[in-house]
Length: 143
Image 1 (tube, rainbow, N blue to C red):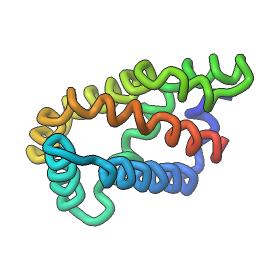
Image 2: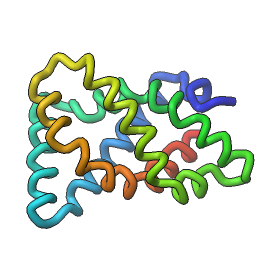
Image 3: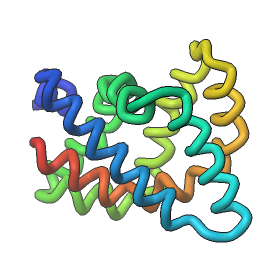
Image 4: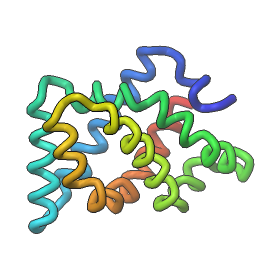
């Protein structure tokens, strides 16, 4: 069964989004130096848009992200460990996820979101790569 079919339940989707938001909070909190300050400032701006903005944004991206990630996940299933497969291919997984957000930002209306995303897009790829093992664990937890 493909990932997007496994996660049809809105409550499960909301919990995955919440877990991913917590993963993002942890990733951002670990950032140091000038680059870390920029990421923290951008993340704070996003969180300042409204209560639960980050989990809601993730929830909105989740269906497309699951569809995009499914081919890699299925290769991992075939090899016996989808979590390990994604974790061992963080650059490819990050590009897949960022392509989803790239497409989403094209239709965004909030100028703060657009400006923030454009400012950090290239520098955030490494951060997404570092988050891949945690994301893979979250997906596996609900599979």
